[in-house]
Length: 249
Image (cartoon, rainbow, N blue to C red; front, side, top):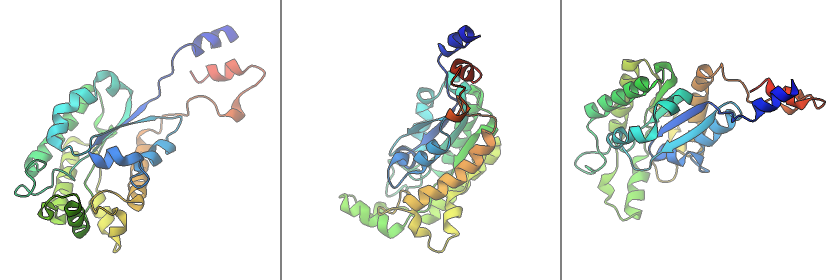
C-alpha cells in the first residue's frame, strides 16, 4: 500500500482554478489598496488557485479580441469559476476619451459574447460572475488626470457608470451568470467615497474588502465541492504519512 501511495504522490496535483478577467481593477488586485484579489486568494488557499488576468487600461472590445489567449478548453476544464470585471474604461465619454469608450449596447453585447464563449469552452453559466464597475469620485478623478498631464475634462461620470453597471447585470441575466452590482452596493452607503482610493477611480482598501466579501460569498457556493488539497498537518499519520497523502491524491 505504501508503494501505491508513493506512485500516486509522483503525479502532479492540479489545483482547481478561479480565473479573474478584467482591467486595472483586477490587475491591481494584489496591491495594498486594491487587495480584493489577495483576500480571495487567501480565502481559497489549498482549495483553488486564483489566476489574475487583469489588464490595465483595457476595455471589453480589447478583451474580447484577446480571449483565446487568456483561456482555452484545457484551462476552462480546470476553472471552478471565472469573473469578468469591466466597465471603468468602457464608460469614458465618447467625446472626451474615444480611445477607451465603448458604446453601451456594444458593451452589453460584448459581455454576452464573452460569456457565451466561456460556456462554449466548457465553463458552466453558474460558474461565471460578472462584476459591474464601481462609482467614481468625479472630482478626485479629474484632479488625478490633471496631475498626470491629461485634460481634466476626460473625467468619467457616475451617471454613465451606473448605466454600464446595469448593462453588466443585463448581460449576466441573459446568459444565466452571477452578478455583483458593485456600483449599487457602494452607493447605498452615505460615505461611499471611502471605497475609492486617492485617484477617485480605483478601489481603496475598504472598497476591496467590500468586493472580496461579496465575491467570496458567491464563490463559496460555486466551489462548495472543492475540498482542501492534502491533509492538514493534524491529520497526518506520522507512522505512515504516505497513506495520509495518498487519500488526497
